[in-house]
Each structure stands twice: as structure tokens, then as C-alpha cells.
Image 1 (cartoon, rainbow, N blue to C red):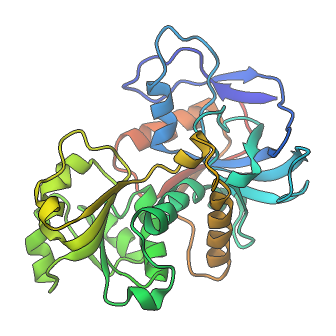
Image 2 (tube, rainbow, N blue to C red):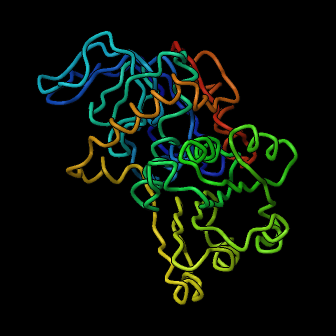
Length: 340
């Protein structure tokens, strides 16, 4: 099968340069599916996989996580999907990625593709959505019953980015009051269009901006950018016994003020379940199916902001260059076929 990968990481300050190569088509066993890739979207974790590779390692690496496609083969232990099913998923970080014609993935990490979306629109959603859903339900302990969240607020730092674009929509479905951070007119507009009730500027202190909105603080904070940059500001606005979740690791000590408020601080990495094969790994399948139902009911929309075709090295380099700029809004999607 055709694939786009690399052997040496190359210049890590620039987008990955991917080779067009032929590799053996994998054969699914046990609970694995073989999916014909129709569309992918790019994420920082893709090029960070490249960045983590040692310069002396010349083994083949195929990156890529977010995928939408069609099941073409199933392992003998599969019970959730059949050949011909349309699916979407973000896969795992411990196996070859999906920048290829066909991709092997454990069915417990896969959801039914929303019927109302095409493959490109669906490929924008899995990684960011599972991240947000796990953060809300597993890390922050937000109730899935909107009536139980009445009067509760969440500050989403980085509301117009990939995760933020869907996190705002999901928070809206959960009945939370949403304050999203954005610093440019276009990102403020995007955040509001995707469910934020208010926007504030993450380049300015949070506390006075929240006070202008009549808010003394927030019950939850979901931090989607460098957590160290916002630690002091978060400590000031989180309410006593509130909860904070970050998708990036803190490099500095947590603010001491969090102690007196008995604040819960948690991390969210959507690959934890697949990396460690946790007993509840199938929960990602259920979360993606839940999201598909919301999409088909018109409650959540795709966060695709740009579509490129075909999936080739030139388009991937362009997409990753935009992603590495730190100024993208929503998700960049590439649609098949895979070409040189």
C-alpha cells in the first residue's frame, strides 16, 4: 500500500518532510480493524511524534492520528464493526499512524462516523472531541445531566483552537456557562459561533475581565495552551473547590493559592487509555458514538476550517506549517486519495 512517512526526523523547527513509499498492507487480528483511509486531519501530536524521534533512529515512522474511512477487514475478535462500516477515530500514539492508504486500529478506539458528515468533516473531530469529553467527564467530573450543571461556569483557555472549537460546543450541551479566551477578532468570532457565551483575552489578566462580566470566578477551567503561562491567573479566578484540567504538562510548580482553595488539578491525555490498554479502553468507542449522535441531532458541528486534497507530501507540509505557526483556527483536514 502507499504511505507517507520518514526515516530521519530532519529539521525539527520545520514541518515534517514525508517520503512517498510502498509498505506492506497490514492484516488485522484479534480486535483490530483495517480501515481504508478517506480523510485525515492534522494535530500537534503528529509532528511532536517526529520531534521525539532520536536522530540516530532510521526506522520508518508513519505519523497521523485523526482518521475517517471505511472498514475493509476485521480481526477474528471484532464485535463492534463490520466490513463496509464508515468510521472515525484518533487511534493510538504507540502504533504506526494513518498517513497511508490503509490503517490498522483497535475497534475499541473507533466510533461510527456521523451520518450527516462527509469523511473530511468527520476527520476533524475525533482527537479533539475525545480529549474534551474525557476532560469533562473523567478529569473534571462534570455531570452529563445539563440540569445538574445549572449555574456552573467554565473558562476554556484557547477556545478557538482545535480542542477549544469542540470543547465549547460540548460544554454548551452540558449546560455550562462558557467563557472562552481568544485574542484576535477572528478567533473571538469563531469561539462565539461555536458556543462560547463570553470571550475574554488570554493576553490580559483574567480576574478583572471576569468581574466586568459579573463573575466572581469559575467552577471549572480547561487549559488548552501552555499551562505555566496562565497558572497565576487561573489560581485567582478558580472558585474554592473548583477543578482545573490541562492538556499540556506544567514545567513549573503549581500555584500555592490552589492549596488553600482545595482545587483539583488534573491532566488529560487521550492516549493514556490506549497506551496502557486500560480496562476501560472501550470508553473511547462509546464517547465517539455519543458525539456522532450529537452531530446527527444538530447539536455539535464539524470544526473543519480548511480542506486540502489530495493527501500528499506537499499538502501535508503546508498543513503542518500552518499548524506550527500557532495561529490556526479549528482543524485542517486532508482528503484522499494518497498521492506522491
